[in-house]
Image (cartoon, rainbow over all chains, first blue to last red; front, side, top):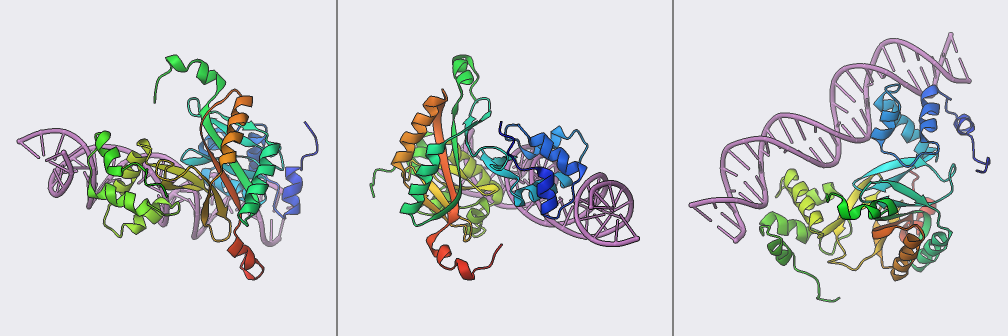
Amino acid sequence: MSTHKPDIKEILRQSGNSITKPRLLIFDLLVGQEPMTMYQLYDKTKNQLDRASIYRIVDLFEKLGVIQRISSGWGYKIELSDKFAEHHHHLTCLSCHRVTPIAGEEMEAFVTSLSKQHSFRAIGHQVEIQGYCNDCEATASSSVRV
Amino acid sequence: MSTHKPDIKEILRQSGNSITKPRLLIFDLLVGQEPMTMYQLYDKTKNQLDRASIYRIVDLFEKLGVIQRISSGWGYKIELSDKFAEHHHHLTCLSCHRVTPIAGEEMEAFVTSLSKQHSFRAIGHQVEIQGYCNDCEATASSSVRV
DNA sequence: GTGAGTGCAAAATGTTTGCACACAT
DNA sequence: ATGTGTGCAAACATTTTGCACTCAC
């Protein structure tokens, strides 16, 4: 719970963008949440915002490095970027579709050495692990197959 | 270079699906290629196939475990699955968008231990590393920023 | 007051579906 | 011969764009 996170208003101001209600709302809806799809985000706005605006804001936030997209099955989900949360990776449950963030310091070192072997200058990386979470595994025997 | 790969015709036959020209064509277009988008795949068919058919075939192939989707920026790309190529991961160049497969035995062990820590039964995993490949890095100083 | 940001409506893009015909078995 | 697979066209979902109005500065 470090309070050392950057301030969204500050980021907007310093990048020459206006601080508007829609932008703050989107930000608030993402804070402390698990990664969500565009539709889920739209849903959370309860018709306070237009879809187009949400796409534009998400776009802006991505350019500013406020949020990041992560792959989720066929599509993607968005979440606050590493600026606002520790860098981490994800466990995606194939049954309940919950995305669990996991910290992984060791992973970083691993990626670094891997990149060196391939003369590749790594900027970012994502690790996605699919499987079954503890809860679903427990009820797996009686659960319905999809 | 093991010749121990399964046969697409055999897979189709054994799963009770017909062996058709469109299916064989799609398979052929994927063999030995880097991951490609649906559009790229469609493009390669040179109007020999309908878009809808391609989606249906890709769908079928995914269910049969013949191909797999990997995330690529906002969307996804498809490639032959580990059945037809060694299990591997990807380096995605942010400049030329080339996707380079990398083998990574160590990664597997890492994922396993990580999963254990979280009481998560891992089924599959994907590692994506973004950065700049050797070629692009060389010309980076003179290249155009996007 | 003025320009950036938003909502609205419409367009563009990507994907899915229903149906009649064609092909694999 | 017969039932699966395909092409076609239309529906649907997702994302983008143009424009007039509104709000932040």
